[in-house]
Amino acid sequence: MDIGQAYKRGLIDFYPDTEMLVLFGFAHDDIDNRKIKYGDIHKVIFGVFKKLASSKNKRLQEAVFTVYLGDYNGFYWVGMKANIQYKISELFRVKFKGLYGSHSYFQMEQGRYPDVPLFPKYKYDKGKIAEYNGEEMVGKTRIDTDKWYGSGLEVVYKQILPLSFQQQFTQ
Figure 1 (cartoon, rainbow, N blue to C red):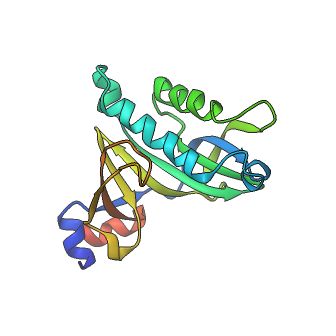
Figure 2 (figure 1 turned 30 degrees about the vertical axis):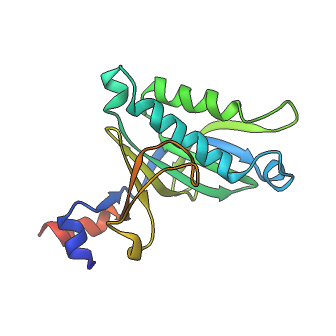
C-alpha cells in the first residue's frame, strides 16, 4: 500500500520532534543473564493494554498514548509521555517491578526524547492497539495470541513518521 493510501485509511501516525517521557529501565546485564527476557517486558505492556481496554473506569479505557522502546546507556527502556495518567504509569511501574527478583535492577525516571533515543513501537488508543512496523506490514492485523504476548487484543500495523512529515499529507 502506498503512503498516501495508508494516510487516508488512518494507518499513519506522527510523533513529535521532542517529548518528555516517563522511562522504565531494565539493566542489560539482567537481560543478558536471562533474569528477564524482552518478551516478558512486551507481555507486561500488552497485559496493561488488556487491563485498560477492559477497565470499568472510562478515563482509563479511553486513554490514548504511545509506548516508546529502545536501548540506551546499558538499559532497555520503555517510555511514554510524562503527563500520562498517574494510574496508568503506576500500573506499568507495579507490573514491571513484578518482573524482577531481589537481584535485578529496575529503574524509573524522566527523560526527553530524542536525548534518550527511543522510538515509538505501540499505541494504545481507546482500547485499540497499533504496532509500528515496516511499510510492508501497514494495514495488516493480528490477534495477540499466546504465540505473541497473550492479551487477546487485535493489533493493527501502522507506520509512524516524524511530525514534520504531516504537512505533506495535509496540504
